[in-house]
Image (cartoon, rainbow, N blue to C red; front, top):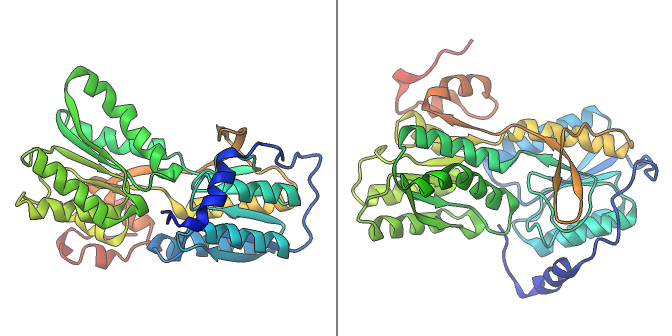
Length: 355
């Protein structure tokens, strides 16, 4: 969700040419922090998920471990995030957990943290081109693949439209890769034709709606499925379908994040499903990893992921598609996330009774 201002040119150039000259802290070089502070740096924190999952779950877990959390919001501005990071590093913290606005620009942040001897971990989106202590997050490819598999099971043939999020973020580009992992073999067989494969800068609803409208127009409304990488964009796709005079629910549309509007559309049969990236579990894992980094303890990585600089220890968190069939269980087990009555307000007869 990057805004490309002229002021970004220097960080962009630096990120593009930077050498991996400063390694992440090795276990033997690590010195436990003494500030009792952890920086949690986010792209922004206005969206529903940040207010209801990432921030409260991270802060609660870190505070339970005896740490104060400095929450930073970059408002989708990569240059602002660089400035915030410089301030945090100068101020002094025991660990940094960062969700990069731009995975290339943020390489300079990782380098500066390494130089200062502060352990740093990517969160949700992986910083590219610079070493770091860890990556905490889901595998977006698994999320994209789970959505594609489910839709293909329902619609095994036809014209598919793929609408990704911001092209400057690994969470978007890798989810698109996940779609292709499942769809491409069927394209090769001739069962599926990809008629649209576009990204949407800033994850904007309007951009996704424009993509969908163009695809519908160019194919005489003959689109059989939309694989979409964010619920806010899915809303735009649903509007495009409605504007084309197509019956709601007749074309499967997926999303991601399980926001209220998407949850309502799913239970009402207007939307196929939403990929759940489990930000609550990710936040808890992120805070636990931050505490471990601050104390020079094992972070509990279960895998590694290459970021074009090194194989980064990876604390993997869940990601999976939730369709109409799974909604009753989901809303009952995630009451901190969604108000069940709000989800089912237009179809109260379908509302489950939770234990």
